[in-house]
Length: 246
Image (tube, rainbow, N blue to C red; front, side):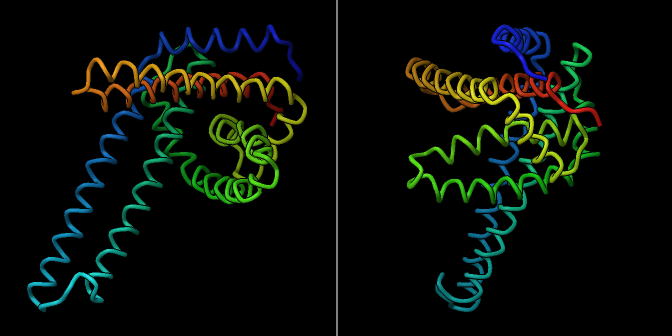
C-alpha cells in the first residue's frame, strides 16, 4: 500500500491524539531510565568496593589483576543490564503504541505481553540493527552521511514488525526494507519529521532547564520520553497502514 501526503498528516495528527489519551506510554521509559541509573551507580559502587577491598587485603594497586577482573565484570553486568533495559523499553513502548492504534487505548499489560512474547526476537533485531548501524557509521564519512540516512529509513519499521507484526528479526528487517522501498518518500518524511520533533523538544528542554535548573535532568528525561512515545506511535501507525499480510 502507498499513501498520500494527507495520509501522512493524518498519522502524525492521530498519533498526537493517541498520546494525549494514553499518556501512560511515557511511564515505562521513565521508570526504566531511573532503574538503569540506579543500577549503574550500584554497579560502580560494588566494583569500587571490590577493588578497594582487594587492594587492602592483598596490598594491590587498582591496576592489578583482581582489580581488572572486577572492572571487566562490572562492565559486562552493565552491558547486560543496558540490553535488558533497552529490550524492555522497546517492547513496552511499541507494544503499547500498537495497542493504542488498534483499540484506542493502551495498558501496561500490552507492554508486558510484548516483552514476554517477543523479547528474544527484539534482542536479535537489536543485535542485527546494531551491526548494520555500525557499518553505516563507518561509511558515513565517504558517503556524506547518506549511509546513515538510508539506514534510518530502511530500518524504521523493524521493531514494529517484530512486536506488532510478530515476525522474527530477519523477517522484520526484510519487511521494513520492503515497506520503506515501496513508500520511500513518505518514510523519509517520517524519519525527517521525527528527527525534527526530537531536536525541537531537546531545544525546548534546554530552554526550560534554564528556568528550573534544579529539575533540569528530570525535565529533560520527561521530554525525551514524550518524544520517544510520540515517535513510536507515528511509526506504529505507519506500519499498521503499510504492513504486509502474514
